[in-house]
Length: 390
Image (cartoon, rainbow, N blue to C red; front, side):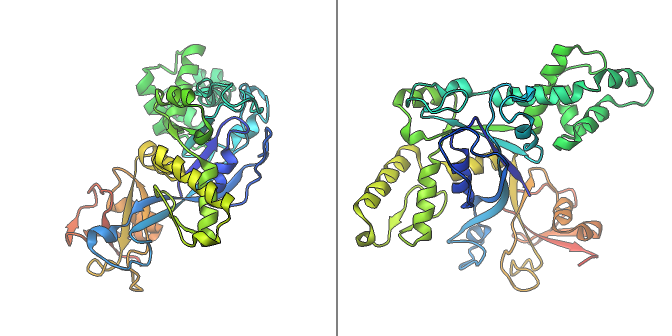
């Protein structure tokens, strides 16, 4: 499963974002380091189900053509500058990022918290100052992990058949950093790891982090942000969220007060007469915010991390290419997130290792044509895998 981590300084709204995205309980309070241990939950990416393009009605696996695919979401403890040296919760925070495939860096767009996460007057702290510091902390953390054995690694690199790229990847294997990540960072920086100096190695670590743990930056509490701060953040191409608004809408929908699906740009009220005046005013305030920002932004942020940062596609495996169903006649029962460039053989392994080992060929259910093992899958493909294994 894809794992996203929610990161940022203390008190920027990370736990509210987590609760809104997962509807899981998370401690939310207005003081630094509310989250001491990582919260783990399940969020979802939202896509248009393949049933729409196939003309299938009443697909049981989706909601009016909207499909939600689960991903892991990690709400980690707040980070302050100097964490890699042990400040704040230090390496405890950084250690929580080991399993993350990508990171959502949440800023307090309202400027209501200082650099340490302490409450201040709204607009008195410019959130632009918080951009980039998490990447910097992770860069120095990774550098610290490599530097411990760097002299030994460089000496060993003089040996025949010794791969320094493999050695670096092995040093960082606990972060799920692979030799492919290392080789890509080498290519981008042009570094010679065998002879590089400290400054070059630190720069390499920064590029390695960007490649292995890509970031998206989100401005939360956007509905409380002064106009000048919003304009300033827009110049940085930052997306905006109102996690508190999303959480309120999901709770109202859960109670049957409104009709709302995560990621919608609006909602409808089911029974206005059942709402109190404050509830009506609160919902209308959220509606106004949604019109301004095109929704609450929470679902959009998750989708952007998965599809833009990680470049994933959605593929639907089936057993019957004519009925688009599995062996129990369930229509489009599964939807898999896969890296763009994946093949039918990759899909077979993702369905089950044995099916991958016994792979023979695949069929494009939309065209009914047999496709090669090396065929590059496209977003929305419906694929039948033919294997010697069941």
